[in-house]
Image (cartoon, rainbow over all chains, first blue to last red; front, side, top):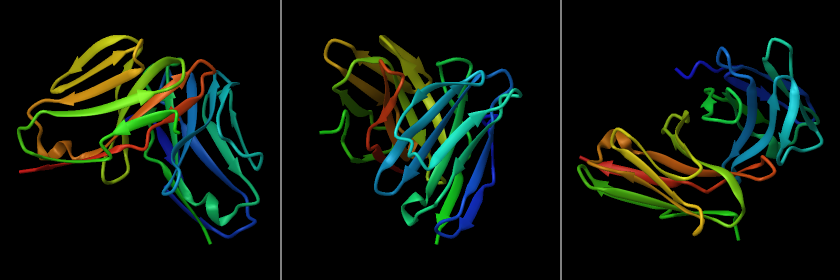
Length: 111
Length: 108
């Protein structure tokens, strides 16, 4: 158990809908990262937050947004969902930018 | 060409064999990570390197910054080492780029 929790574990929704994925980092970690893993694209970095502020941005679509709250949990919002957004979404946390601890992932299926 | 290239893509070994997985990258980096992804999907960070060599149990990771190359070695491999091993680099813009992974199968 990495100490990072993600909810929900599974999510099935329809095209055009909006969903929110939630991540709670390990106790004491200030950085949260979001990743997408799809069969055809592999792992991709989406975004990093550090202590509530955006720290780095990767291949995050404009339809996606994230935030980190004062209690350091983070949410990833995915809107206007398309079939191609079906993937595993991982959250990871670290103290600053050191070793990352990964959550179990949220499997999103868009029908 | 991908910024992070791993080889081999697939690797089958007999229990006890010494295993090497290679990672080459083409960008400036601040750190390189080796990750292990189990068949169930969970990801574990094995190493984070910015120079030299690190060892943890039967796993050894090395990096050569000048040659932009890293290797992950597994000594005395065991069937429980069967997993996908992923190399990732953090570039100088704090963006993370991933290799496609090496699928390792260790047979008893």
